[in-house]
Image 1 (cartoon, rainbow, N blue to C red):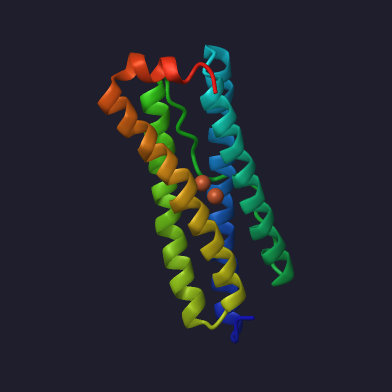
Image 2 (image 1 turned 30 degrees about the horizontal axis):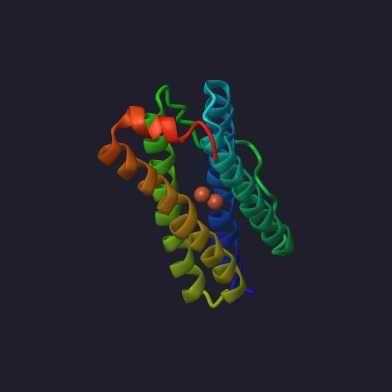
Length: 161
Ligand SMILES: [Fe+2]
Ligand SMILES: [Fe+2]
């Protein structure tokens, strides 16, 4: 638990900012997944639904911690959705969001460590691991494939599993 009341409030604020981003990511991935499904890109649909579920799990962990610290989870969405119109743009928008989340998580982790709230820091570190090693990694991989294979060939590989 954070020691001072001031630290506690600052950590609840960090948690609420991350919550808004997790919920934005969940919704952005939901829309993009449905677009992939509509276009018949089954492989992309399945993968992005998996990302969406991860974001919901992240939001759940963050809300649990806010409630435990005696705060109020802020569910009014503040982060704007960036819905793309082409597959590469959708992926670039999703990647930009993941980078922003990672940046924010790093700042939050640093604050929590200084305030000696190691439990919240641990939660943020778990979110950062998923962000870096799963979501960001996959998106960077896809954009790399598109660049090397060309968009048409990449999209052919995205029709099935
Ligand atoms: Fe997340
Ligand atoms: Fe993510």
